[in-house]
Image (cartoon, rainbow, N blue to C red; front, side):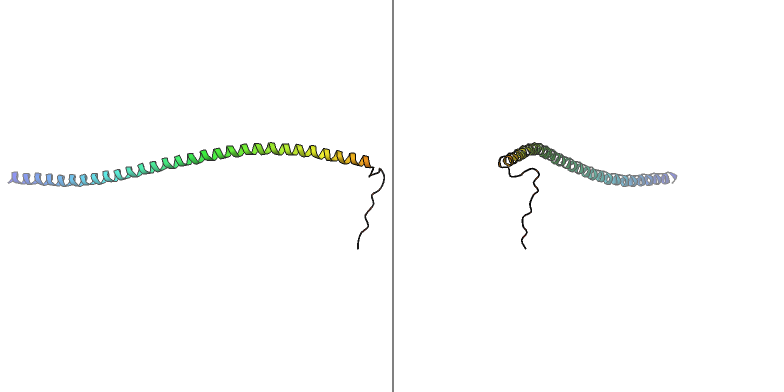
Amino acid sequence: MILGACALSGWGAYIGKSAELRGLTETMIVARSERDGLEARVQRAEQANAELLTATESKLSALREELRQTSAAREVTKAQLAAAQKELGVSKKRLEQAARDRITETGSIKAGEPGKKPPSKP
């Protein structure tokens, strides 16, 4: 009888441990499945980040090229403006000299003569 009780007790402990191990095995299977799902999400996120980085680097490169072209166009425009201002200064001096030459040739303005006002119309 004692031997039977010990045998039943041993089988009971074995069945209890076996059920506990099945529960742990199921928990481990669920945990592995969740881990695999999380790893897949992390991998997709890393791939999306890599694609965003590539797109951002491409846009940055295009913007740098646009800035380079804009800066070059600005330098060309500055040079054209400087040349136009210089040409304007030369033309202004010529025009002033031509006006002085014409005045001295025609004598149209005499030194010391006050200017006359044209008659006003009512």
